[in-house]
Length: 75
Image (cartoon, rainbow, N blue to C red; front, side, top):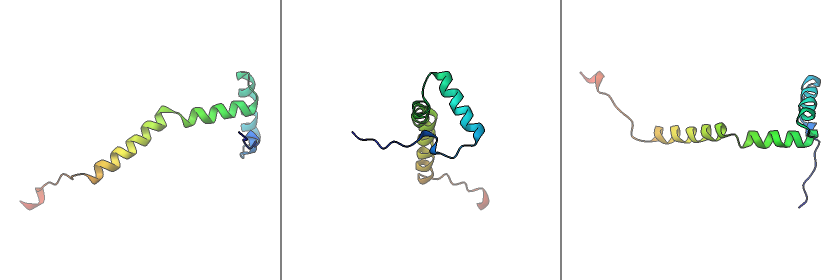
């Protein structure tokens, strides 16, 4: 399988941010491409993000359901 290769730091990062990424990759014992790939995949598979997505679906579904109506104003 052919995968197009793009520099991991093709995203716009400030010099300070680039330094942080390089230092973090070095501390993790990985090259920058591998480090950023792992970070992106970890973020994409974050259980909190998945839970938030399910919460959005739940709220949307409930807002379409039966609405509670009060008759306070009819007295």
